[in-house]
Image 1 (tube, one colour):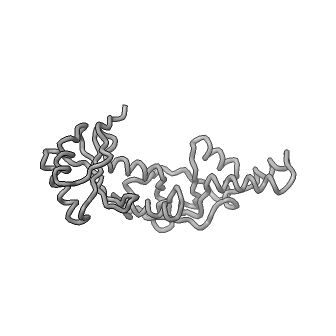
Image 2: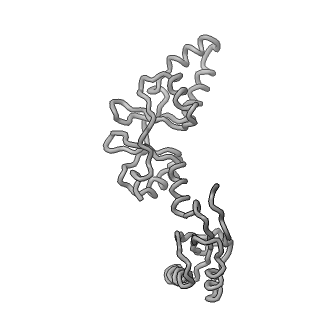
Length: 218
């Protein structure tokens, strides 16, 4: 799946000359944590809720309060608050590259650009929704965590054993457990994983944390 398949295209933006009260009105009622700053369609910066808090704290600590503070707030522009160095991604990149960037850069929103033109944005919520869909947890299903004896050959055998019971596999993911073991996480669209578990255990596989009967969301 590509970034273009998960990004939001209806992006709320502000211009560099937007005043602080306008930025706050856009962010706070909608629960947004980031707003890109654009000029003639081109991305020139981004403002996060953290940037806003820092700007407000700086104003409060820099001079008199009351009416003078309010006037200072009203004069402050997006250009004075925004971060000009913005991590971006293109729409044709793999969705997992967006996730990697967000983790390594410690950011929760990733503007999507073509050249310098803003075409969308990916948030941590979009990444979480993709993960949930990929794992099939929105459907009635069960999860099997199987310890792999041989990471390469073991995965193929696990899949064959499960499918031999007539059980369809919705998703497969391999990962390393905290103990350093390689394990495969299977999502199967049944509330009774018993036949698959028995087949795996009969071949000597350790099946743990079998999620039995995950209900569909109401």
